[in-house]
Length: 351
Image 1: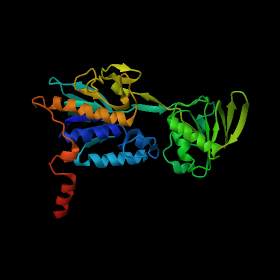
Image 2 (image 1 turned 180 degrees about the vertical axis):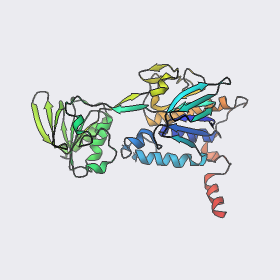
Image 3 (image 1 turned 60 degrees about the vertical axis):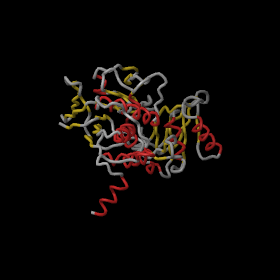
Image 4 (image 1 turned 30 degrees about the horizontal axis):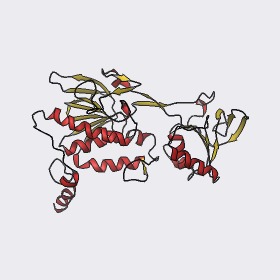
């Protein structure tokens, strides 16, 4: 039985950052994740994708952000159960919880924080008859390694942030980038749309709107695709890779059967107080939750984690008179031994 103060389900950026905020209050954390490594979707799906809305960074690669957060939480010595999915939860007589994983590992904690992102997920695939034949043979739904596209001709389909961002990014890598979208309006950020338009005007990217990919051609690998325009009909375009980026179809998995109030595949929480669920002692933070005005941004998840641990402290320490928030600019960041990170390094060096 693994015992901890806060049991965090999900090792993505929000789950990891929770360790930092909890550590400032001297609360220990243990993290469960179904993936065999930390980082969640940022590490598994798009480690090389740049992120632009993290304070202090004009741009940071998703994988690098995870590394930086891990450095930040290192003084608080989090522990992990990786490669195991949280399957069941049992409420004990004293109000604490036992969470058991897919491999039978049991975890005991008075507070559970669900930071599972989108949950388990799979890419949304376009209705192209011979699509499956070319999967991993020039058709990719997730960009894990941009160098795969070095000096290649690629077509990206989609109209959201992911399609826009990757199209922009890969102009620096690929020989030719074509973005195909079935409408003329995009769902992504305005600055990304403007950047795409700039690249098209400079001749560094091709943009086909009011268009869809209808067929893929090639013997053993993608060699070309048929693009259908709303009014101009079909045209065949030679490519090396076709990347449909229509988002992910999320599923909560076993967590969806734990008795939470669910709305549109997300856990309803009380955002007026502390992002608590309808079960006392269990919170949901990050993309896994929903409430009026919810924004699915990493930045917002960081805020939710910060507020949540304040309530977690009161549950774990019910007799504490008052929790006084301390500014890190005054108190610094110390590990559980009370030694500041810089001081701890110096002590180890002396020994």
